[in-house]
Length: 364
Image 1 (spheres, rainbow, N blue to C red):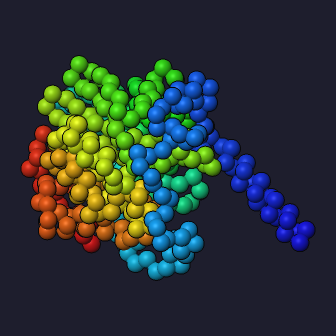
Image 2 (cartoon, rainbow, N blue to C red):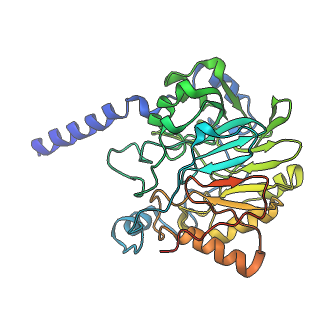
Image 3 (tube, rainbow, N blue to C red):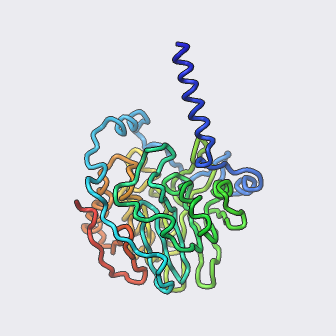
């Protein structure tokens, strides 16, 4: 018993010490925390969604979810081949081109109105703080920080590890001119070496003028935040990027709710809506879209074209790796006929061309 307790104490101590390392970030404090407390969405010491959002769907239990995760057979969870991709030279791009380059999962680069945006970059090859876990699929890590040009605006939707990657954020620091994120997220960034003067933290439903021809709005999502034991102490956001000619919805992570219709009424129609459609599970339906809901949300937003993301790079749920794109594609053909943007990693998505054709690269 004494030996067991010593081992247990050593294990707990080791985990606690590891969680003090920088990659877990830093909780908001001081003036930043005081500003957070002024937000109408910060209630009883935590940020809250617009409507009640259960951790698990009614009828599911944490034990059952864990059992399915570790013991239930999960065919085709990872691809048995290298993910198809191409590589666009980002350094040599003509700034007059309005394009998007996807890096897999929810990481992408946008060049619009001559400005360059980087959204939720994850180039470390992992979406977890646990060493050796949640590794990127073979073929999805063609891009590194060295492949990025100077970035005008880094946008962070929320502070989960598959969206805010410590190794990437540290490495890309010299290439970032300005950072925009939700309330509280700047605490992580300052802790990791970003100057406070570079960081703009926003609440939901705020608008800032980036350039004379570029406006950014923030909007709600239905999700949560947290990097260690702290939960919902930073805000999760979506963005509307607007020029006189284009309007893009950058969705981040979200379960389905009324906010999509509200955003569509207030800011739509959108030339392109970027919405998650992967890493879903009926057990946590409230915080991640199921494929049919992705298309409903796109319709609510009045999107002219849909780009489904949050898949194709990491295993964070129990569905087959290519099911998200296959299901969105199938349901769309049967019911919606909405133009879909489904580029390979590294392929140019032309923001000015609504009729661009893409291959069904996820088919094995």
